[in-house]
Image (cartoon, rainbow, N blue to C red; front, side, top):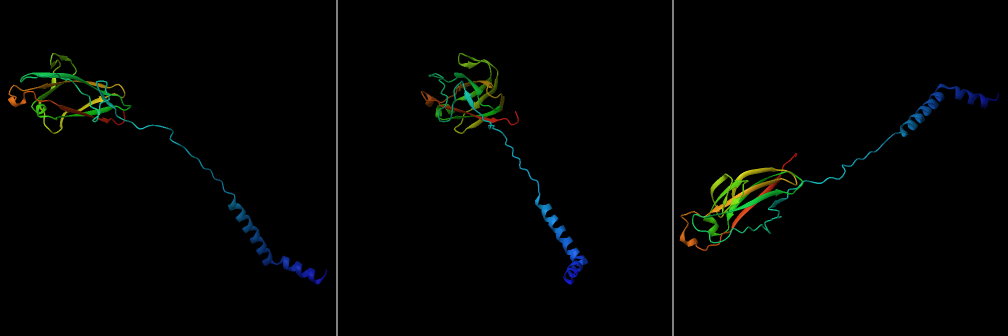
Length: 195
């Protein structure tokens, strides 16, 4: 063997060279091991749904503030006389609903009247047949809450029949002769959560 071959052989047997080569192999495996990573991505959607709504109708009419339900109560009301009308409050919306009611007199003649309200019943002549839940309510120029919270009206089919009776008191002023009477009744619905 030549001296060169012996020297190479000695160098290769050297502990240091073996240690360096061993580290190179370990580092190489470590690097390869971190490159193999598993991953996955998943996605879900809620599907399609709609929000709830309230859709109050009055006597089968979609009455709004810009297109109110007009009720004809006749003419020629004298002191001590009344006029009555049935108003069927209907929930046509997909959510159950409660509602509140306000009343105001838009004219001087209206503000001279008083209001009584019965639930259910019918109109006979010029009066409500059912027992009133509200009697003698003064009508003012400002919207006055009446009846509290009403309902719950079932979704799409709920109804609440109200008989409203307006009376001109016997002590009505003589200046109210032939006065126009415009009473504004506003129904405001609120969806019932969790139903």
